[in-house]
Image (cartoon, rainbow over all chains, first blue to last red; front, side, top):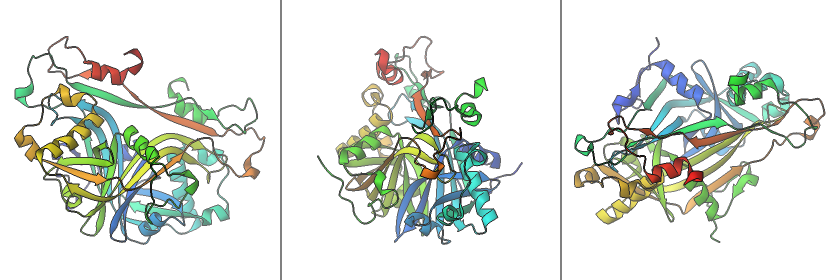
Length: 221
Length: 221
């Protein structure tokens, strides 16, 4: 079992009872999420942008246009912070104060290092593509040299990270738990896939491939 | 019609064709989202954390424990950046390079100013609570003086913000649009509410109230 080894800034202080310390918990949140929020410092001010990512072992891969200011900042060895958050439900407590949310959350601190070398860059892009759209890397046209040159690939080491999870019912003051008939509980938030929408430029009758069908309806594959 | 008036850093450069410039587009994204990612600078490094929020006119309210380091940093007049992102689908293109996501995204730059005065603080907390759990402010116990004292309420002005939206099918290279039988399209991501889960401490038979039922199943209310 590999543990997260918290540093000063990756030690969970608020809601420490929600902290998870096993590295597999970190992987689980990163693998379940679809986008991350990447924060960088630009001219002394924070900037946060949503972006796609992929994981390969203990590396989080990010990518973007070589022209994007935020990725430029993030890819020069400057410190970055990436968060992946899954919201699982709204916690309706008996008091306003104890309202909360159920969630799974990962935060990674580090430096986003530009990946160089064609094989290494392709490996990073493959991780991102397969995370976003499993099966697409082999199914679709590979990047050309020109496309590769226009794409920045960044690697963020997962060494310094924290994970928090909240689940379960509201935690109320004992004095609020009465039999006054008022309700409390959780309204779960559910994420699911809708039916695939074929590109209008496709010839009529083009079949949706297995890797897309399997994601949409895993139970019937 | 009120327009967003972009500053240098809130001018959308990457994918400028996806930028929206009407203030109602900003409101729509903020009102549809449930959590934001708030970035602050701590000891020169960026830190991003997911947090709840509420909107009242052109103010975004944030809150947290008065003991939270990130909110402390954010609430001392230091610059912050908040992002609200809704992921609407995965765009399966004909090439790896043109894979993308459909999304609605808002980014706000500014300073998170501590709100003082009981009435103003309650107004901010009400906005956050009603955004998170519509109907809960009047239904549940109001904050005590002690609870209020333990809660930091911050206001972020929506003056400096940008909005980006991508929707629709893949945008491929013309040379990739062939009749080779390969599929391309969008797999929509759908967010919905699950059945309310009553707190185990509730007396048996406690009815789920209308404001929760209306959110879960608006079509049957």
